[in-house]
Image (cartoon, rainbow, N blue to C red; front, top):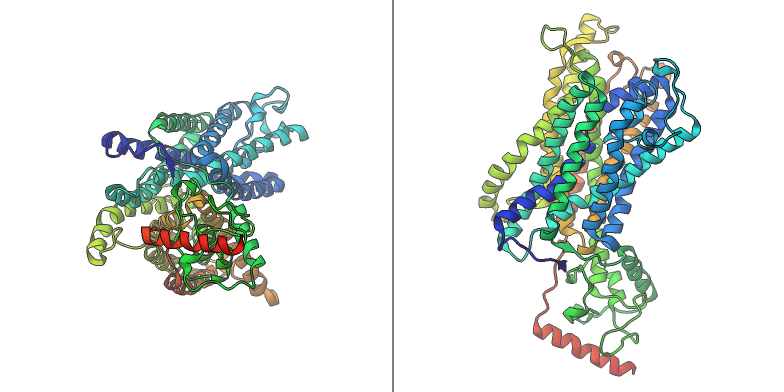
Length: 605
């Protein structure tokens, strides 16, 4: 299944170092991708919206592409390139283009004209080619940035660079966590136990990088210069990639198993062709390759499950059988493992769908939480120093950084003793707890807004931009969401890795990123619907321009109710969920299987 062998037993100290440093080094690269995230909304609204509505639209389009590209990257990794080479190529593309940013921020005066399209809500982008190719850099007159007018060709060049970066990140995001988990040998009980812990510390490392990026780097950009602000992450990225490549000879690389979409289509087509065929009562008689050397490279064999029985028809034996090597038409006869791959994906989808509502709640940090904070007192104590409302998302990061060690070192050992489960909690239990905790984040936000509106009415503060309630009262809702994130997002990472078919793990990891995009779309759709309904008959609505006349507390309560309903749906789905089962072929089962296939061959010969 893997190229290379586990070095855990032979080189335990080295392996532990590489397991933490090299695969996680790309998680730091992913964290640097978040580098300007805490400042991005301010720059987009302050620069793009004021100076160019088209820039805001282009940022949204590019951000959507960044969520789609991981699907392509995951497909390539699972089908043809493997996770190692997909990440290697993508990281090189990403770093090479990002390093041009350092030149760009010095050469292209983007701070007023196009600065907003450097970043989207996930982090930073790139205007690379504009800085390095003669003739693409815009000509400016005078000293003001307002006198710079890039041509259509120059603008096109910068967007080519933007989408090249989207391509680069698309190969890293779906692979890095799966590749790190690949380094653990499930045959070794010690390594298998450590793998669950790996996902915790992987996510921890991302948030450490995000903490540095959202605090130190933002300060450097504002107070020292954008050249330093982009130059430091560029160097860090290069170091991360070098660290990743330095452990190449120690990695375990899973062999790609060919196109998973083709195998899924084969099962569907074969099942439809045999819709009239009866499935045998003894499921061991279904077609499976018993010879180890004939199994598809890169995947374990999967045992039969009793869900979606219609697709079992694809594995019913018929006249297609060829004697010795079981050479069959794969569009007419599929193996049990092939059928179970499709079943695994179908079983994952309901669990996956419940993550969309959570993503909608998570997205409030960059939308309504910020709008709510803008209506509060942003001063630090009695000083003149003001806290940017968007910067409070750092408390979500701090929540993650606090709860990961607590979960891994305290909660898991206690839960392990109580439940007897090797991981303390199952992945579904962990995700359910995360969904439950997220409800209280919306409740806290709603109660705070209700309190703020009461003060507005009591003191007639309707025309005040900032009500005299400290913005730090928002901290609890951020911290609660950070705690929920540790349970839900990390649980999702591990769940999709463990329950996805072996040859589809990168693709299934990419599906998790899609939930974030769909969650944002859901939030946007809810805002549109609520605004349309609540503004009837001349009412200002729930979310007017002046929130003192609105009721975003109602919107938070709406999300809380949706979260409760989503949690109920998740519990029902979790109870019905059947775990993936690896096939163990006993000698008796193998002999029985071969005798039946020999009889079938004689019948049709």
